[in-house]
View 1: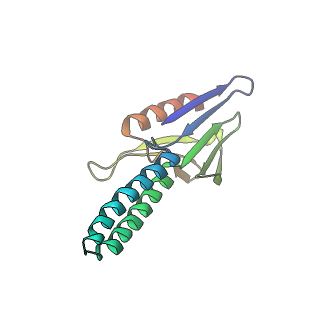
View 2 (view 1 turned 120 degrees about the vertical axis):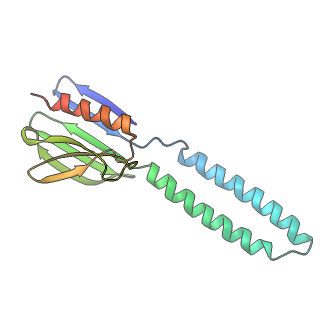
View 3 (view 1 turned 45 degrees about the horizontal axis):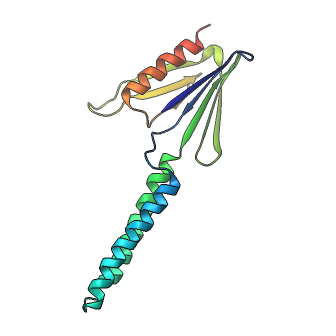
Amino acid sequence: MVATQFDSFNASHRFMIRPNCSLPWRQTVWFFLGMVLVSFSIAIVFAVKGLWLILPFAGLEMLVFGGALYVVARRGARWQLLSIHEDAVEVVEGVSGPQQHSRFQRAWVRVYLEAPEVRGHPSRLLIGSHGRTMEIGEYLNEAEKKQLAQQLREALAP
């Protein structure tokens, strides 16, 4: 998902790039708690009937499931902010806060949409100058990458 903003006062463009997260963190937690409730309710019924060995396996299953949900939610919280100013292009990446910052000279910046090496794999949207490149929007689909590449080229045009 890409949100664009143009500031006419500073003549700068901003592109906020995020994955399309289908479930916010709070709803993910509620979903997990609901699954724990259902799983342990079933496990307790079986334990009462004498099959007590199901309880540790239900706990292990919920532990693995919770870990997987956490990893997916964490990946869904990533973002990139690409700012195009009069003389520079800045890319800030992060999850909960800014973690990586890159800066390029606007006059030398090029945008590349690199075709995949293996058929069926996603293409890569690269931005860079002077031999330094970085991938942006790796979690976007192909149509969004093409559209973002076109918008970036238009914003970088003199």
